[in-house]
Image 1 (cartoon, rainbow, N blue to C red):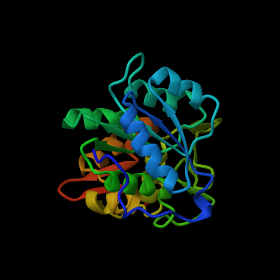
Image 2 (cartoon, rainbow, N blue to C red):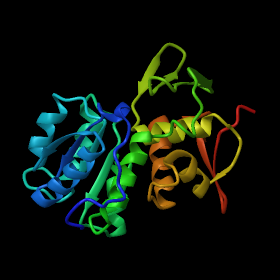
Image 3 (cartoon, one colour):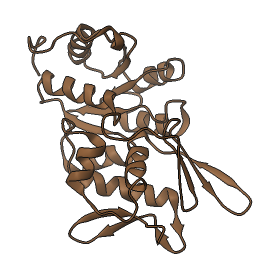
Length: 250
């Protein structure tokens, strides 16, 4: 990791001044490096040195993004991520794992518990900052603005990040991570059309976010598990050798 900020990073507009990021890592040099560079961009930085400290902040602060190490004392990053996704009020906040562990199974495990992206600490600060900025931008520049998309038995509210599944007598809210929601919305907005994994990464994650094609498979699997079946069919269908499509109404 570089010791100080790169001169390539420049301040951004005052519109970002209210952006609040939580960085969770037990290495002081990592905390200091990220805090220094992100504060140059006008962001407010909160830090925690273990998972227990992180949960106290998560329960009391509305943050816009969380950067998590995996190997930490008391509570590891995977457990913190699971808590955020399942029990906190920040279920849709972007989560970036920044860790010394770079094996593929660790990457997949991080995505499985709800992370949006995963970078090894060996990456330079410019790459890490670029990834954080891309996650903060989310999908606003690629996903159309809409109120509620109704398809099959689903009501997908793009503005509120809500998904309701209707049955004869009930209307159940289903919880998704922000990236799961964005992928679902993108596919459901073009039912029947087949998209390659690379296209889905580009349209949902963005060009500057470093994720592999396996990421799409993990997210589709989790979406179909949460949604269940629609008339004995998966909502999101695999097209062998090509990619994925959302179940067409026809």
